[in-house]
Length: 190
Image (cartoon, rainbow, N blue to C red; front, side):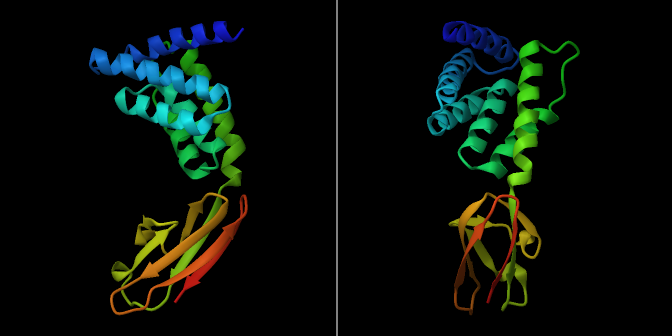
């Protein structure tokens, strides 16, 4: 049964990869990476699959691959990133006579998105001190955050997060916050 699934995936991916201007080498490498990624995802090894699927997608876009990447991101707890990846699949315009593999990829993406989007939490970050928000630097888990997201609900994966803020002439400050599935947290940093 697994061999049949693999052959069907191979044929489906061949069709999906046939519609781009990538070089033959890039297309072939993308197909190989995608098949490896899908096999890893099917084996429950999503952390490894994410790397292969993301590299395949960078080399050659295929909605089937993008959908499986989104599924694995969600499976690894990266709900915000995963649901945005799945939404990309759903936003794509379908061709006049879409192949069955594309329709199934969209159905899978919609199903995972529907099950996941309610689990995304939110953090509303307020930084007190500097008068101008443009002078503030905020990081969440070490990653820079756009200050346009201050004082609005920022979609956030469930779990523990470290929020740090700094500004010229002010002492840096930080706060730890735990976000539950589908919950909203307020964080005030002074």
